[in-house]
Length: 318
Image 1 (cartoon, one colour):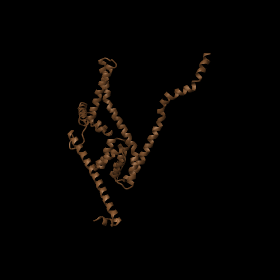
Image 2 (cartoon, one colour):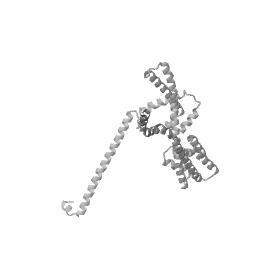
Image 3 (cartoon, helix red, strand yellow):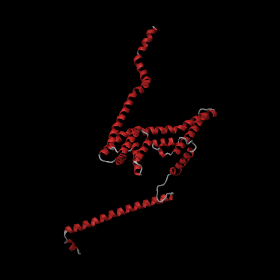
Image 4 (cartoon, one colour):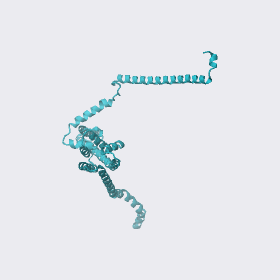
């Protein structure tokens, strides 16, 4: 095609041809940039894999830290060995307390006993070092006092565990009325009790929903609903929840509608909660009396009788 023929072509056709060529060029540039970026990402991944394998990783997995590989296994082994030195008479009660506390740190009974022994030995050694070096006490007296400190250190983990149990039971008792209201609403909407428990566990995140989620998991594993609910009552040991579980078990055995049970239990538990609040409010004046007698009354007497004291002294002195 000659220049004369190109000059005689339609301008619209010429403009379309130029636009198509420009579009193809832009697409080629974009495609090249994309391929280059993908190639760079692949090179970066290969470089990370090579670095991981050279530093001791396996098949590109995440490198395990020194704490995970060495320190934690050593600490767990030490706690286990110390725990075996303690008497095994109260293992069942301690296992139940750990369940009620929500198994903090996934501690087993033998681990907690090891922590108790470690706490006793640590407090005894620190007490002896402090009394001998800082107070200048004789070695015999310091050893006797350090033995007393070791006994206190032996029971310090128990105080911590009891605090965890009380806090968790208070959170469960506080969340129970709202959970029952939500269950009642979902059951009235047509959901089954098991599905309502599952929906409740998906929406809320608190100790009560954790325990209810464990109930659902046990039922999915083949445990009967009655047994799963009984296990929940043994793990939690909250009076309101145990009463609710007992009513649910009785309703399941007698074939009573769970919706009606939920309505009645929700009203009853809210009434019990209101009564507890009223009881706490009634105890407040009695608890405030020592504070008023120690801090408020002296300041009030000083303000009211203070200006009259100089005049009384002057009158009696005269």
